[in-house]
Length: 180
Image (tube, rainbow, N blue to C red; front, side):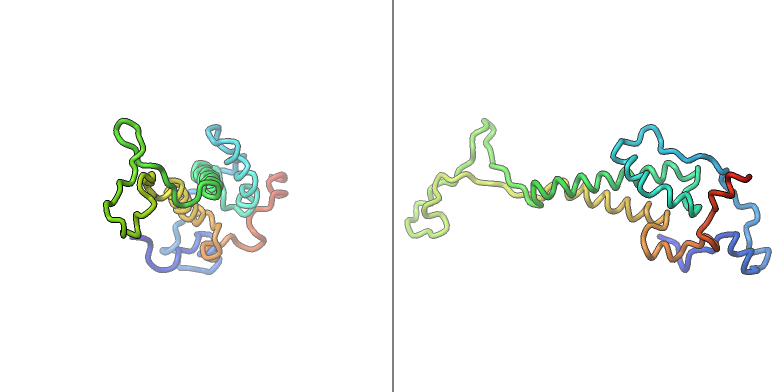
């Protein structure tokens, strides 16, 4: 079961709002300010997604050194989603393959024996085709679920972004890092 009620306020916001001291987690762990790089296992296409989103997320303080693996999973899911969409455009959502016997011969429609049978009339000997959902649809669905789950953790949807609070000024100031 998911969390109930509104997302908890970050500790720094609780302090600014003057929440009671017993309701503020003063021992909340804080990640060190380190250079954030994509992990070595991340594929080239996923690194491109990383370069697209990581600078903004890092600037706002949403992406920290502790979040590297989780964000890499998100980038990987985005690449899998794009591959699935591309494959579906080419192959379509429904695939059809001919039915084959154990010996590898096509299964063909037998003659009906009824000359008035409108459904089979003229189709005797036609190959029987099997239709099924393209497996890329499952890849797409799984990637979408991962993107929504992990993207939400990084505030990458409007509703999730509304629940994040990064303070005045949009987060850390990169110039401040140079001075410290």
